[in-house]
Length: 242
Image (tube, rainbow, N blue to C red; front, side, top):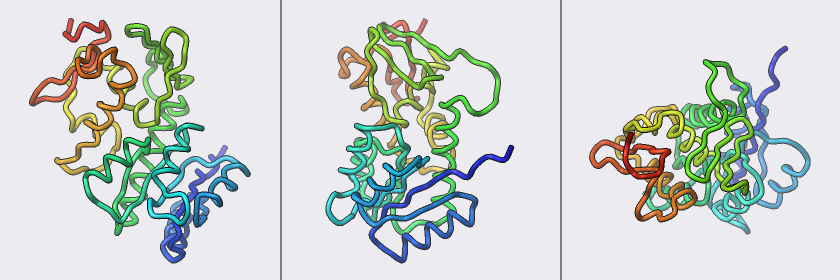
């Protein structure tokens, strides 16, 4: 049975750019639609399922960062932020509010396509819809249990809210415990496309994840920093490898 095309919603008040992106994505096999602001986006999301939102930062009314933060409080819908502001601080803020990725304008349509596909591929893997070697679906560390099938992290049976990016990072750690994972390897797992050697998005996500799982994020027990090499996940929670 042929798989239905993925539904992508493009939120951008630049009519020309929005129409170009929508047309390009439709040509690439997606079911893409475009709206001009947050209110129109809300109406479309209420009307039916969407697989991913491409969200511009500079919007009339509610800005894209505020929208991303609001969406993260309501659902786990993947978000790719677009912005004309390419500063490192803006990129970090975009990731901090829960976006899965951040792309600076102007951009190559092929790069946008690659990033969308990477985000959706990770989402499908976390939903258990792709093949591959069988692996455990539940991992326990400290008072936490990560269920990859239901995509839920619980602490003493209470759910801990994670963004798609945080869940992907934690999954990368739990399936390879007590091993040093370089930043480059983690970026490859999280993004799946060519990246800059100066990309600090992994560090941002590690910091954000530590705030949710570490008793003291300043003295991490589960996600250790291995200086000059990367990070190591220690599920026993003593900050050292077995």
